[in-house]
Image (cartoon, rainbow, N blue to C red; front, side, top):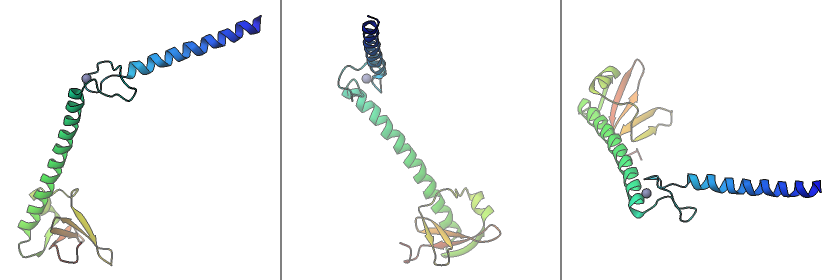
Length: 145
Ligand SMILES: [Zn+2]
């Protein structure tokens, strides 16, 4: 008799758990845009095409803004290097680049020579850091891929 009760008690617990799990996953299923409850397929993320489009458009907008911001920094860096280096080769102090608003965190590519020197480029305009916060400015040569 005791075994019979225990058996049904366990079955009851399992059922309660199943119901509980179903409820908790249902609660999480909301439209990612408007938070309205979803009742469709398990992989449904949005209540409507409108919400899906709104959500995706906003993501794309943020990505576009980010790309624009980086491009602006890169173009500014390029302009600064070009202005300071009209002859194609020149050595300047780092403080001058900083004063002009040069952003050292952004560049388009790095060229490493056989001896390990690293040229940083913003498009075709580049620089090599020397000792004592000096920078040798260069313009892209054919050897740079
Ligand atoms: Zn929605």
